[in-house]
Amino acid sequence: MFNPPNSYPNSSSYDDLLKRIAQRAQRNQVDGQILAILQQSFEIELGKENIVLSRPERVRLFQDVTKVILTDVLGKIDGTK
Image (cartoon, rainbow, N blue to C red; front, side):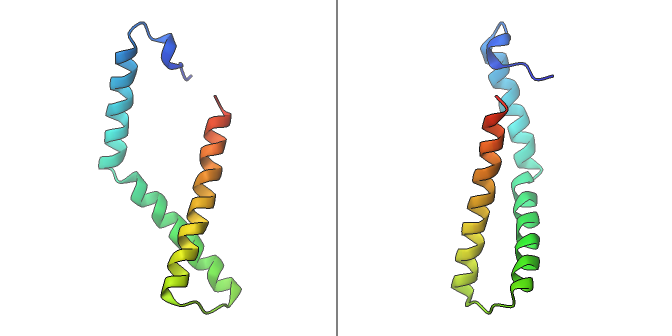
């Protein structure tokens, strides 16, 4: 079960734990894995649309779709507090 930061007698221990776990996730390249999943999904969905895009259009669309999805995910995370 998740304990909010103020439940720790020493808030620095929470901060240290947060830092260690975040660093491990970064070392394991979790961000790259997330982007790879989004890229695969994007390619599949774009293929279904049968639309030809220039490389800059494709890059921009991927960036915008990714921002929409990640913004939604952040909203869901914030909603659990």
